[in-house]
Length: 301
Image 1 (spheres, rainbow, N blue to C red):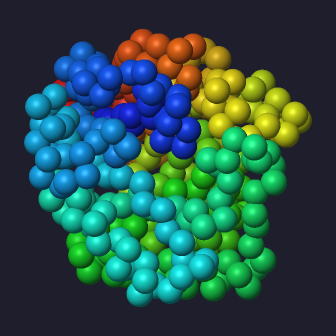
Image 2: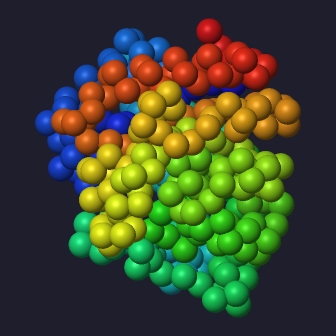
């Protein structure tokens, strides 16, 4: 059974907290839950840190806690130290019944640095990727023992961004490491979403449905803009936006064919001053529901 969710970065950005800082937290929750009708929402810096308070707060608006981003620093610290650092986040996931953890290595990431061109991200050698994959797999095995899948988020400005890097990462890790497939980051990172999803769908446990405005993505590359500058310029949008370049129907059809059972989340950060989150998120959810019905994905009504 499919459930549809959103992420608060459509209203209030996590990488640059000045974006959407004027939007009250209550408005985010009310629009996402009561007005638009999402089943759940991912983590954001506005939510309570206490696991019980978090669950109770979201329940007031008819929302479940889907999961939350966890930044690893395995390139600079041991698996044991990572496990120790993970404990507060693990408590939040367990209290809210989460089945996976959105995970990304950020020790050398530049996506939150407004002064660094996204083109200048770090890369790993083949040997470094193998060593990194070994540590991620060990961390994933620990999560699995706790009843949670590690869902690795390939992401612009990080060491796993391009199709080749996704392939290398998946090859360097084992069965405990799962994948969060993000259509927008895949496309922006130079990939064909249909091809990349088909290659790795057996390990996909979470799906981010974000679209990309191709002209702005090309401008980000050509003008050497930062990831944050690209977001403010409008590089991302929601499914159903006619300015978007990603075709979601064949992606959802792949999920249906594989019997995907999980969350489809609109994680499409935009400048809320330029693009009203209520309008865009409503469009995105209506589009995903329509397309899911067309391809045979069962979802909650």
